[in-house]
Each structure stands twice: as structure tokens, then as C-alpha cells.
Image (cartoon, rainbow, N blue to C red; front, side, top):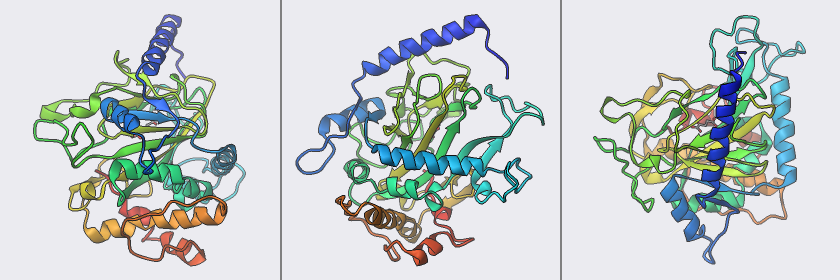
Length: 374
Ligand SMILES: O=C(O)CCC(=O)C(=O)O
């Protein structure tokens, strides 16, 4: 791994410190709060709409954090030794290796790190299928109440995956805006300033690690209004320290909600702390149905070139079933908790049992084959 020169390390530390101060001054972080009608407090929604992101603190209980950590570490321990290998480092078959994005990149993102560089798991796609703790978090009642406040009661899924940035070696995520469909021709976002209209939804980064300026995601506040790719534009390289960007600091159990139209990215993780965040996304139904785009998520691992898709009502109804199924799985795990009552439409049984588990995992027809890239 190349080490940054001391001068550059000091400059990065100063950038981080300045970013923390600017992040904390935005007023877009705190616990989830709801009005008497069960909707997310208006000032939270307004701050999210203004800045294009919001940090919810203390969402998950310590026991949920522990289970996510235990299950995820067991997955990592069973990762294949290389992309060509089906065995893990203990010589056991890697059960879910096909869902892991592996690379030999070092923390600089250097693709030529050499055949001797150890393999890194950078991303685990579709964890709801094989991490019960992730499936239960997906149905957390406060998270779903928050989602309904932003997208309406009949919200629908997007995609789920786990970002893993190993201590001292996590590759960067390039600056980008995820949304690709709901922009005007000259690149203005269609989503209204009050969150109305068709939109790209948000990525909710659920953390069970400490996300710091060094290892975590950075967001450019207010950048959700204009698409940088419009008119032949491009995204800045991740080597660029955008002066207005701020870090999204998360403690274990916090969740960061980032508008998919916002410019965001993360620097190489040279810190001694690993970062793990599960991105779960949701859309408003009207933003999804009938939209034509290039889907990059409905694959075992995300694919850059994607595949053209048009989201029919049936496609969305079938994918949406994962919401009530997860609610039922969570209800069985936490019988004393009041479950979220989903009011949207879906097709299929919503009872979580061995039959439905087998249905959503059936080879060739797994639920994630209907992920909804917008
Ligand atoms: O967490 C990260 O570093 C990247 C997340 C991201 O790019 C995304 O959710 O689109």
C-alpha cells in the first residue's frame, strides 16, 4: 500500500477536522422523532430536503448491533480465497461467495496491487437472503415509519448491500450521484424542494461500526438539485477533496439517510478502524412503476454496464413482498415489540416460514432479481 506523504496526511487531517465542524453545524442529525400522527417530525424532513442527507442517531439496540456484527463476521470468515476459488481460508466451501465483490485493490484503489496482495471483501450484496439480523433490521418499525413519512404508506424497495472498508485497506468509493432517471433534460432534479414528485429515493446506511471522516461516507450538502452528468459533465475524481463536502459520522446503531441524487463518495480507508454499513433503500411507488432505465442492482453482484428494464406494476408488487415478509420475520423474533403495519400492495404470502424463505431464495428467481435501480 502506498503511504501518503506526511504533508498530505496533515492536509487530509485538517480537511477532516474542518469537515466535522461544518457537518455538525448543519443541524441534520439526532434521534428519530415522530409527531402525534406517527409521521417523522417536520423539522427533520425539512433538514433532509434542504441538505440531501440526515443522520439518525441511536436507532438500533445493542443486541441488534451484536447480531449484525456476529453474522457479518461469520460471512467474512467464509469468504472465498479468491475470485476463482470456491473454498474459504479454512478450506470450507464458501456458501455465499458469489454475493461478495472481491478485489486485490489496496487502500489507494490501486487495481494493480499484484497477485500476492490479499483478497478484500468490499461489498456483500443482497444480505436479506442470508443474514437474519439484516432481514429483521429491514423491518425495524421506526425505520419503516420514517420511510413512510418520506415516500408515502405504499413505499416500495430499492436494493440492499453491505459496504465493508477494511481497516487501513478499504478502497475508496468514487464521487457520484446514484439517480439516473428523474432529472430534467438540463439536469435539474424533478423532486420538489419539499420532497414531492418523482424522485430517486434514498440510501439508508445502517452502521454497526464507527464511521469517521477517515473511513466513512462524505456528502456534498445541497448537491441533490443538479445532475453533474448533464450536458456531458462528469463526477470529480475521489482524489479531489471537495471543499463543501462533509463527513457523515455514524456510531454503531446510527443510520445515515442520503438522497440518491446527492453527490457522495468515500476516501481510501487508511484509518485503524474498519467501516461496515448496510445500505437499504426504498422508493415511492409512483417513482418506480413505469420507469425505464438501466438496472445495475438486480444481479448477484452489481454490474457496471447494467441491463435495460422497465418496471411494470407486477415487477414492483413482487419485489415489494420482501417488506411484509421481513415484518413477519421480525415479529417472530421480537414478539414484545409493536410491529410496523405495512399498508402498501404486494403479491404473495407475507408469512415468514420455511416455505417462503425457500421461495425468495429459489435459484433463478431470487427476490433480488427485481431490485429497482432508479
Ligand atoms: O458507503 C459508501 O462508501 C458508498 C455508498 C454509496 O455509494 C451508495 O450507497 O451509493
